[in-house]
Length: 122
Image 1 (cartoon, rainbow, N blue to C red):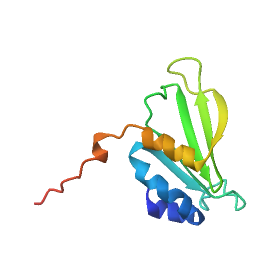
Image 2: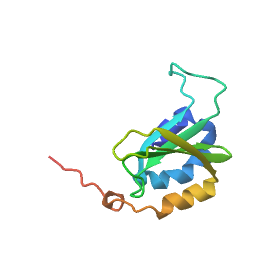
Image 3: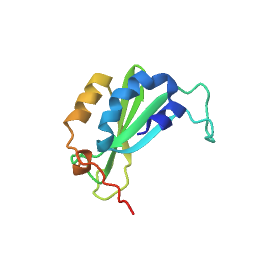
Image 4: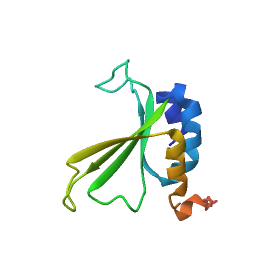
């Protein structure tokens, strides 16, 4: 999740998304909006940013989408009862930013989170 991307699509939430940046290594996808270049652009859409995470407890037939607004985090749990099936069902949850950040902080970090890339010099 880059600051530039978030500043472009969620500039008024900088104070909200800044604490999330340290958890980027456990996030597998990112989104933010509203996006003016989108076909479905709605200028009245509430500013937000979102992500999915690398959590070993999320199975192949599941997706968990976190969408963060100024005052809340909405969580969409998409799933199927059958293994290796696209998600067919949805359950909606909510949480506070504090609880979401606690959840992110307890996820295992990949080795690359602790390493520094060595740039080859030619």
